[in-house]
Amino acid sequence: MKELYDPRLFPLSEGINGEDYVIATYYVAGGSQADLVAKSAAIAIEQSSGSWFAVPGETEEVRSRSAAKIIGIYSVPNYELIAQVPKDEPRAFVLRAAFPWINFYDNIPLLLSSVIGNISSMPNLKLIDLEFPPSYLAQFKGPKFGIAGVRELLGVPTRPLVNNMIKPCTGIAPADGAKLFYEAAAGGTDWIKDDELIAGSPAFSPLVDRVKAYMEAARRADAEKGEKTIFTVNITDEVSRLRDNALRAIEAGANALLVNVFAVGYSGLRMLAEDPEINVPIGAHSCFGGAQTVAPNQGLSTETAQKLIRLCGADISLNVAPSAKFNALLEKFVRVWHIGYSPMGNIKQTFSHAGGGVTPGMVPYLMDQLGTDFILGVGAGIHGHPMGPRAGATAMRQAIEAVMAGVDLTQAAQSQPELAAALATWGIYGVDDYNKLYDIES
Picture 1: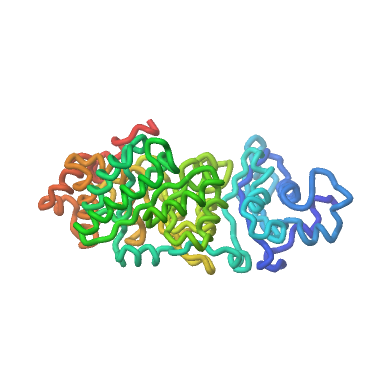
Picture 2 (picture 1 turned 120 degrees about the vertical axis):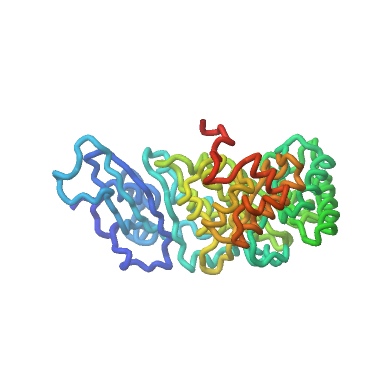
């Protein structure tokens, strides 16, 4: 019998104890005459107990305990006859492999090394999902607050939240940023964050100075509007400085934190989220994530990444909006929201933060897709408003209120000058040529 056909490598999913395995699902493509069974076995062996050549140390005991198992191979299209297979086109298939999680326990770097390690160098292989059994999830604490906790902190039980990121993105001093913060908060923004491009403690904006200035602006705005504002200060830095940044920010008054999760790593996020001294919500920004996810046939899927972000404790996570600045696929946008929102064992929900070119004119479209349990992230759509950032934030709130009341935006704008100015500047998605606003993909 051919070694790579060994049935011990190919149990049915019904034939394994699901509590002992993390299931990885891949898109794989090979040559037109590829042996999908042998290729699948080679992938599983490479990423678990074996190597490219049989070694004496891989005993039956070792293989039984640690070898990955192939539980599904699905050719796409699902050919049945030799005559159906094109001679000059690649073969594509979906592969499902069960990895014994004893191999990597709760070690996220080792998990990634196992499920998408050496094989990430193969062409046409993408990790599209990871499935975790309750026994694996139980090792993680996940978000401290989740959707319910963030809503409770803000006292906003139902409507979508409004987020704003201070613009300019970077190079701005605390005093100048605080002026913009105050205006955006006073206009009705619930949650304001540092941009992903200002983080830690740069010379022009020391961390503690920035927190103190912005939180004072928040106090003034909150007293004026009668609502609370959360500020997520971006503490992204060398991993050795992350915890110290977090504790100094909290001591200075910060009521939330932000990290560029792909830059500091999932374990950097987890370290912060599971620290008992860090008792504020944590937001995760996805910048640099595209380097891992955007290739259609390579890397890992956005859904997989977002599942790991939730597992490692983000209370809030960026979800790139569809048909805006980066033109994310609607199906990806909705699935990422599902991954933050749907039950996941003992792990709390992660608030999905729709961002990347959002203006008041996108509110009906986005709420039509997701309802009310998400966050609208608006940067230039607030700070670029022709009447100023206060009016920009007010326009966002007006758009949300109109949609929740079942009122058309054009009609609502007749009595609300802030909304009217926003619509005149950027238009309404699905009515005007909304994509004219951006040239990133041109």
